[in-house]
Figure (cartoon, rainbow, N blue to C red):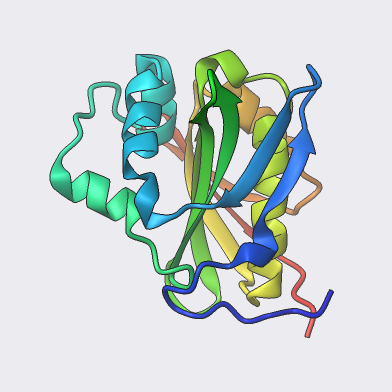
Length: 185
């Protein structure tokens, strides 16, 4: 497949794909759409306080119009998000989100993600992260960084097993990580 540079505010259909997780459920991975606001709000309120702590490093985070806007109004270039969607009672249900933001642009990005508690441990987060990293490589992003709560053992293990040479710094209950991506030109 020929690499395609993302265009601002143009939905990139080439990144839609179906995956199967450990229990056999078929999940649609696709870029977030601006029309996903209600799905994202439901996703947020379905996260446990522990999952909110792991994702936002704040267990009691409350939604504000600014947080909602920031979460769903992405441009696909500087801010890109993938969501995991399943059908439940004939309705779409968002069960996971991973995203990157260029920081600093043009070739470094921070990454974050979360999976609903009932869907954790089935390989979904790993599949989403791998898909996002492939997109980042295509977009010539070289450096990835982020923060993980030291209590988030699943993510710490994933990071340890990633195969990337990771630079880690721990401070105040949080592990800051950085690693380089192999960028093909």
